[in-house]
Image (cartoon, rainbow, N blue to C red; front, side, top):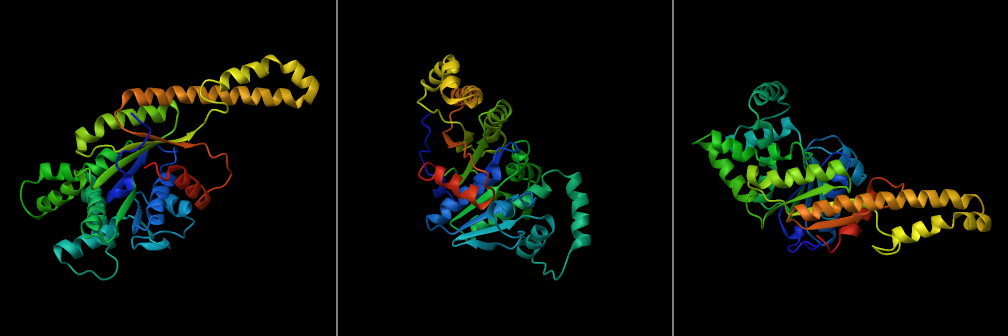
Length: 315
């Protein structure tokens, strides 16, 4: 498959971003949202687990359920059970609620813990509702990690299979219409060129469409070490330099030896990473887009901008 997305992810109206913990999922979700906002699309990015990572990535203060504009055309929010329940009751059950609904939310938590899928459908329902009413051109979801994303996206299908008639089933129908339309909804899986992230990505690609009806759209391979001298030259050049270690140390000084050792380790790491990416490319029929290792100590907003630059025109 070419390392290029045929249909732009940004032309969809809903994009879930998932990946194994630590691969850069939140930064990538924020970068996709930033790219959409740069192009003039009114964009919402939502953190589903409300751990605060999205606020850090965007350089924003603590995010809440009500979206705030963090950049022109870029809005951000954090999901939570109490507010999503409050909105559901107001919009669909027509129950006006003033103030906190803590006791009700705690009761709901008890019920939801006993009935898997209930919390997830409230969160996914809120996201789908924003898509349905077209408040934004694009909604980007910093979704659950690969181990939980199937349960999150698949919640409407699970509930519909359980509930045969009534208001709840009717609402799952329009959610599934949104989720199952590949023109409307996309899923980006973030990984790194390492064994476990690639293995989890392969497992998720194999499960996602079968269990949720939502097909993966693209894989973003993050922190990829690029060859210094061309694909086939880097290893050979490094080994030749190592072969001439004595001459280099004699000419440059003892520090040359340490530089050669570091170059050899870096080249070995790059080659191993390439092997994992080859395994990924050979195993899935999903476009793969790479983001290079940034080699920066910067965090937050600066990293998001650099990742967005790397993805621009490629997703």
